[in-house]
Image 1: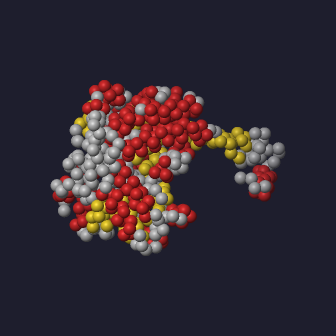
Image 2: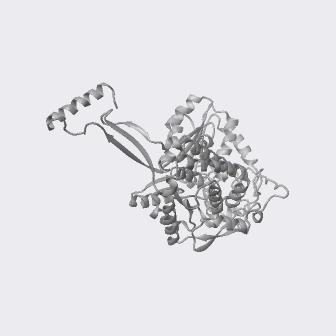
Image 3: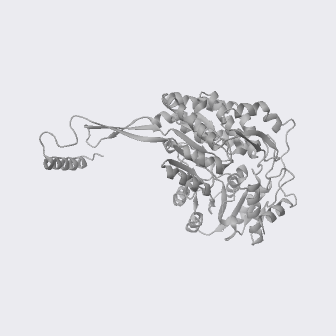
Length: 542
């Protein structure tokens, strides 16, 4: 079956089982939210000499005409950011942190504005859009409170205690180039930029054009909170054109997206010997052990698999269930999945929204159609819902999936999960780890110690016990990122801010030099130092 045939077959299918969430009376529309005045306000900071546009997945209609940046525009944006960065970096860290805390309050107070934009640009349900508000607010609060402690000078023991005084300083890298994806346009744009700003950097950001208004709203609010406008530059345009230009000029690169593109970004950064952090793809596994609470696991699987229509790097696409509880789990999971309400209004009430674009719909349709054609069983979903919107697809559960079905190993990045059965703990750990990816995983058990034991055996950057992804991601004092093909570096915690800095060691030698002195010749100095090294070991000095 060809790609086009797969897309056509699912799009032409009969209307599925998932109900449609009714839109409340008087709910806002795109025209109410994205007015000419709003577009003019948000795009005033974009460096671009051409024109492009973005669209809403709910209907496919154009939302806004936007500036489009050329390579020369990108160079100009970096020039402006580089000129403004030293003045910003010279401010005390607590003054920079205060901007983040004011931004936190503005986000909470004006969240309805950004929720509308997120929904219009991504098609996701409002509650899933609110996850982005929560994540950004938590990151702003955390780095607003903790940045000074993360960045403060640190004293270290010198080579000769008492005679060598050593201080570690943290210097900003300069101008960070950030390439942000479309799936979480608020959290994965400004959420990642906050620690870069508070550590004294400027940022040139390239958000995805189709979700640019959300990122531009965040920039506007940060400026209102006190961030100098020139410190935060935005460029827009096609990824293959603008993305390499960002990498070409940046002092450090932050990228979130596919593994394939991430490799290209890493190569470009490596050629210039600049640092890079990459959060890439995943084929995340959820393990339901035989002692799990089946009802809670089924409810958790709905959140883990279908939040933001599965268009989340850390969502679950492989579901391993112990054979002793498989029937009970699948029955409950399927019932909950079939009851999910799909919707396209700017209001709470829908359990899932739309896919973001034709490419995502094509991939989802192709993976499901191929799996069914090769013998997999549809437990729930499996049909497009053009009656709701052009890119809606029902939350889908597949059983009996096996290689070489594409859905078995390739990242779908949509509302599709495959169920596999297992017999024992060793088997399921081996199966969960049998992927080139290593981003997130989930373990369900009533035995907390067992959950931690299994978690330690999983080769993923985050593991959640008795939840899908939110606890690990939301605990921003701890690092979040991927192993293996899922990326390099971490966001959140100390690693999430220190990556935007250069470590500088300042060592002051006092009283006597580290060289022959007091009449010692080379041989006597070497003997003296050898005795000193033995003494330092004996006294357990580091």
